[in-house]
Structures are given as C-alpha cells and as structure tokens.
Amino acid sequence: MKKYLLALAIVTAPVAMTGLAAVPAQAAAAAPASALGDLSLYEAIAKDTLALVTKGDLAAAQKRITDFETAWDDDQPDLRPRNVDQWGVIDDAADRAIAALRAGKPVQSEAKDAVAGLIAALQNPAGK
Image 1 (cartoon, rainbow, N blue to C red):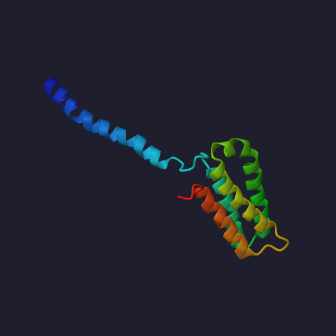
Image 2: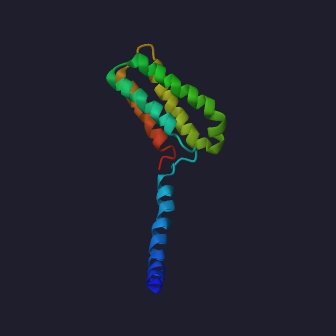
Image 3: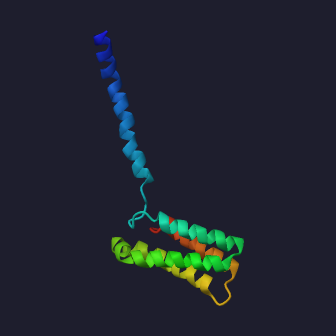
C-alpha cells in the first residue's frame, strides 16, 4: 500500500505543480497594463461621474469630478514620475472632462463624451 501511495504521489506531483504554475501567469494577466500602477480608484470616480451625467444630474457630476481632480492632483508627485507620457494622456483627458462639466452651461452630451474619454484613457493610457 505504501508503494502505491508513493507511486501515486510521484505521478500526480507534476500535474499538481503545473496547476500551481498557472496561477502566477493568471495573476500577471490581471495586473494593471499601466506603468502608473493601479488606477481603479480614479476609474471608479470617473464611472460614478459618468453615471451622474447620464442621469442628467450635472451638479452632482461636477462635485464628483472634483473628487477625481483632488485625488489625481494629490497623487501627481507619485504618479507622474512613473510614466510622464501615460500620466499626460490621463491628465489631458481629465482636463477635458473637468472643463466640460464646469462650463457656464454644461452640455450633457459633451460632458458624457468627455468623461467617457477620461475612462478610456484610464483603461488604456498607453494607447495600445
């Protein structure tokens, strides 16, 4: 019986190890594509903003985009040095979204497009 269990362990060990080796590859696939690191906080705020714009609540969307602006500006000293180009892509998109929402009379469709552009930049700041 002991020989059987030993043989079983020897045969199944490589199979079990193969399954474990796949975990890091899957984890790597889930890693952020941005050199800036995890942008999920900013994306969540931008998506909240887009939902408010879509509902037509531009006053609330203005407040939420200010939350984005504050977080983004506070983190600039850490984020910008990681990749100036990617940071700039997002910063430019953020400026467009902020301007669209802070216009004297914001136009819902323009604000929606600008915030959607910000989300796209956050999801793919490298443009790949």
